[in-house]
Image (cartoon, rainbow, N blue to C red; front, side, top):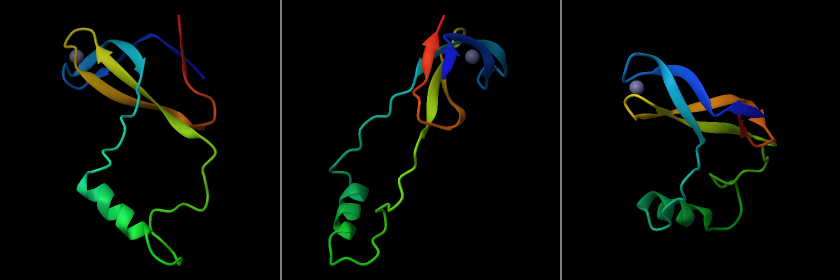
Length: 93
Ligand SMILES: [Zn+2]
């Protein structure tokens, strides 16, 4: 999937359509010592049965996420493009 490097998109801070710079959003890694993560790890221990958070079916693709930066107010907004795809998003132009 290809996507232009600059788009005119709605900026909620300027409340208007402005020029935005496009970057591929990268997800940060989860903090392993966060309390929710530790509680989840504890719940995965045990003797079989149905365990919440363990997936039996893996989805084929992921939804591609972009970060748009407004060129006027420099604020960033997320944009999810299309539906699930196996191909990674490419910036062109
Ligand atoms: Zn703006």
